[in-house]
Image (tube, rainbow, N blue to C red):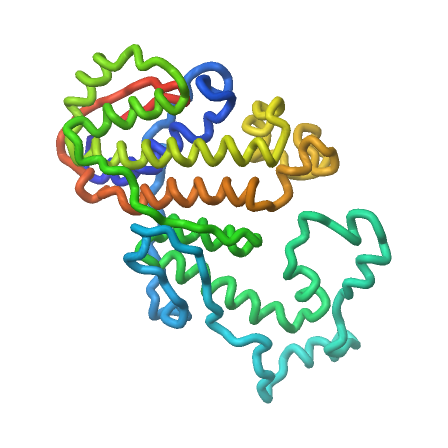
Length: 326
């Protein structure tokens, strides 16, 4: 493995298991899912906190060993004070409008049906639609919260937790991750995947021999993320039982990423058996986000710098949920 290649190790291992979520014990199409290392790119560098409003935001640091409720602060007080150079008023006047411009809730309700009561509409929508002057300040806070998450000591996990909060799902995150300091952490993690899938680990001897050639720092990083993936997979399965028809899991996983537009013919928000895929709930999307945060926490906490070794090695092991390849 070239130096730096293992920096992408965490995302590689996680991706190898989570997307292949058909029925437990088999991959989505009944085969093995191979995730190539060169498909994983390094995350962008965190922005300079001095460049924006990050210093004004509360950043959780060193608190991930114990579960905590995700919170976020506002960097800007809204509504913002109107200064002498009121460009918004000038723009409104040029269009023959004043500060009463906006789309009222009553207007939406007058249409009836889903336009009046769209279950996927966020709570903040009508506040901003009725008073567009609030949009810049709300957007500035949205951006500042994202910047604070990226600048934190768990940037991947924080970004997902903050994204969930923006969608109305306040999560409990954190908690100590499994210990991976054993003599054969990679083997033990792959054994845990088989156990979670309810499948026999028939190739344990072969995997043990192959894993022995993998440098220990790489094993530990991979094992940490594999074990977090097992936990994330459990929350994913529970979420999908709430969000959709379990008999349609192949359709959700095959077409979900490209089928969110109405009329796609594959997944339709206007039919009862698919509607839950578009609705937020603590039991559905909340669990989905919680599992994703746990997985991202493992990537954040895996010692990927130590895993950037000079040794050349190759490792491949099949699991019921996909192929682990290093």
